[in-house]
Image (cartoon, rainbow, N blue to C red; front, side, top):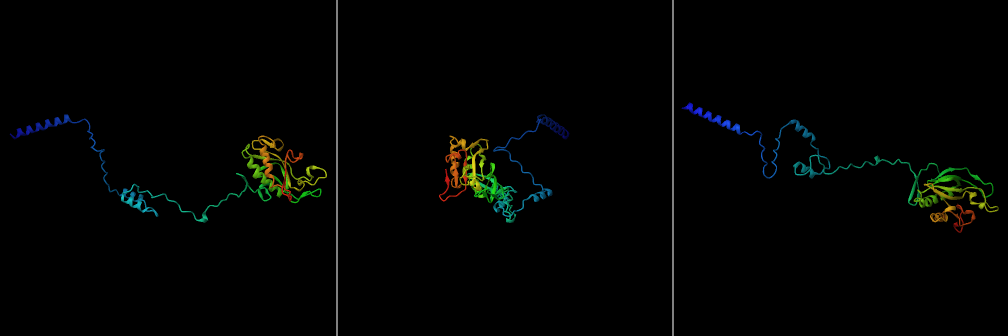
Amino acid sequence: MRAAVAIGTGLIAALFATTLAAEAPTRSLIPKPRPGGQAAQQAPAVVNDPIANLVNNILKPRPRPGANTQVQQMTAAGTGSYTRLAVARSLVPKPRPQNLVRRNTVQRTGMAQSGDDARRVTRAGSVCGRPEIKGVKLQSIPGRVNGCGVSEPVKVTSVSGVALSQPITVDCQTAVVFNAWVGQALVPLTKRLGGGVQEVTIFASYACRTRNNQRGAKISEHGRGHAVDVGGFTLANGVELTVLDHWNDPQHGSLMQQLHRVACGPFGTVLGPKSDRFHKNHFHFDTARYRSGSYCR
């Protein structure tokens, strides 16, 4: 009887195992997502790794002087949005001691002011104590007749950064006033015209002669190194403007007349095309002084 029960039990078990094998899935089943969102990820188990603990201790930020205490507390408590390596604000280096401040080693330069324009010039090759006046000192010039000669002449090649068509021989007083007229009148008035003035056309400077070369006339201020004759000027684009051709020019006449007018005062004598037939083609500037003031025509 017991043997029959054992045989029956074995047959049932074999039949059940065969049925399970036939109904087994061919691949693993994927569990359905839990309701309410993605399944929570299982937190990794904490492993007591001595090497990992050593690395974490090394990378752990040290407290910095001046750091925000509140941020440190929030970070330690894990309640803030800051990371372990965050700082409360960017660190600003302290200013250097005064004796370490870098000094300016740029070579000093002179500045010739001319209205809104300013041209930097060095002191090298300057005369008359003005860096804008370039030239050389000359030995005294004795006159051939009474009234001529210059005790301390200079030979000037450029003023306020503008070249002269030929050097002028004058005294320093005349050189300084002429430099002021070029730098404060001619340069700013022409800076928007053809690229600005590039060269001043010089007709005459020192010459031991009478006024207008007339026999029996008084000695000219040219004979004392006090005068300069200007015939016009050349622009950076190569255009030449002359007193003869542009005094009454519809486009440039007002400029020529303004240059003549502003010279009156700084110079003691200013003569132009309206003064006489001898000055139709140039401006005569000199530094002679008169009791009644400047003479300008």
